[in-house]
Amino acid sequence: MSDRKTLEERHQMTDLERVRHSAAHVMATAILRIWPDAQFAYGPPIESGFYYDFEMKHRITPDDFEKIELEMKKIAKENQRFDRKAISRDEARAMAESGRLGGLSERPGNPSRFKLDLIDRIPEGEEISCYQNGDFIDLCAGPHVGYTAKCKNVKIMSVSSSFYLGDESKGQLQRLYGTAFENKELLEDHLSRLEEAKKRDHRRLGRELGLFHIDEAVGQGLVLWKPKGALVRRALQEFITRELDKQGYSQVFTPHIGKLDLYRTSGHFPYYQDSQFPAIPERDTLEKLADEDATCATLLNGLEQGTYEGYLLKPMNCPHHIKIYDSDPHSYRDLPVRLAEFGTVYRWEQSGELGGMTRVRGFTQDDAHIFCTPDQVAGEVEGCLDLVKKVLSTLGMSDYRVRLSLRDPESDKYVGSPENWDKAEAALRHAVIHLGVNYSEEPGEAAFYGPKIDFVVRDVIGREWQLGTVQVDYNLPVRFKLSYIGADNQAHVPVMIHRAPFGSLERFTGLLIEHFEGKFPTWLAPEQLRILPISEKTLDEANAYATELADLGIRVTVDRSSEKVGAKIRNARLERIPYMIVLGAKEVEEGTVSVRKRDSETLETKPAGEFTAELLQEISTRSL
Image (cartoon, rainbow, N blue to C red; front, side, top):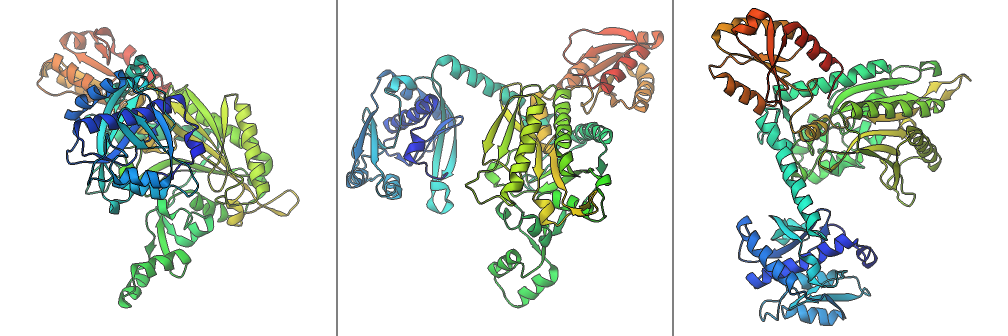
């Protein structure tokens, strides 16, 4: 359970949140009418709807959803009023002990045990209130809509298990999710988008199209790129590499692991150790502590405090790039130094938060770090932003917003001087204004070492994804004592810019699978063309044509199966291959090919050379 909201925060609910909060009470009322023994914990509105956590003998399954929805609609039709009543702590406890809170009536011998605990968690001096609709009374700070009639546009979505207050030791509950909207049209539109999202789910498509695999024997959140998925990834990497070459980047390679002292200097360890894999002690240290029968706590504390040396699976590439910069002396004439890497990093995500390719524990960033003079910052940031724009426009992602993430001056989580933060924020603000797009400023969302610009992309079904990012950093160069010799022949500290247009290649590919519904544009498709010989009589010619196309860099296969051509076409379409060529004796004799596009129902016959030229043009220009 998230941190408890204040009363002021609760009363700032939007109209939609009020509807959803009220719908949670209606759902609880319906459940109690069907299963009177239910014990309720809490039921907040969330971004996608609402949920209620509860305990009862009956295990809810999807077969129960329709029954619960029908009861909820009856309650909405009864147009029950939501009445608020302020009560004393003693009154609240008496109502909970009688089973009345979270119930339709008193339940002797069945006290509302979760409500008793929640009452004890309400700070002294804070007003306690309950809300009643019909016979249902619940401990609640509100707010709600006026009547249950406003909660008629509802849908039960799913059921899962949860732990009370998120604590495994406090016992498992059932969690029933629902959604609600202010009118029927909005609800139907939402459900339609969910169906579309289900159809586009990259986890299903990735499995069906043979793009990637996640295996429990390897580990949760660790992606295995299969050959076809690797071709998509390679196409993306080649695309961005060509752009980096144009902008004067140097590609580097760094190890997947580094010494703890490296990350102590950067601030990643132990500052963010909860989101990192555990540190790895040196073998000698481990053997020494084992001989001494030392506890795990001794080892962990020693690693954290620096008593023992160890290593860390790298959570970020930047300390490694810093060390590459620092390995040579630099003059202001050498700057900017632009270092780029497809570097794999590792983050510890909770197992319940993992999801396909979009939330993983190991991912590869199209990462780069620019070391420049203060005078070069504005131009370098603008170059980074132009690169992100190029990536998004090439992939047809024109619907995006820009978020300028700044520090919260009241927080102590940021490193570096306020003066350097002011300079970094001013540089990014100037660059985003120069970009000429709408942007929002969000204090408190900056990285611990510097402010950043994030590109938030809306996909074809309206979901938002945070992708490309650009960050200005005056702090890490100071922490690592980086320098260059200026025109005055004195040592100066460079400014560091972090940037990643794709962000995570895993996450970006997962998004692309869903955005295109697996129908990648030809330049990105793992298989761009499949040749379908009508019979074995034209198989040799099909193989020869495939070899010719492969020599030109086209990803092509030949369907050598004994299936009829109609079945071959159907299989190729199921695999979402952009182009199919039907090759029969007539085409071989005339030097033509019969071309069928992925979503077309017709064949178009044209000279083989003409088709080859058109296909190469489409690929080279990255047409959509």
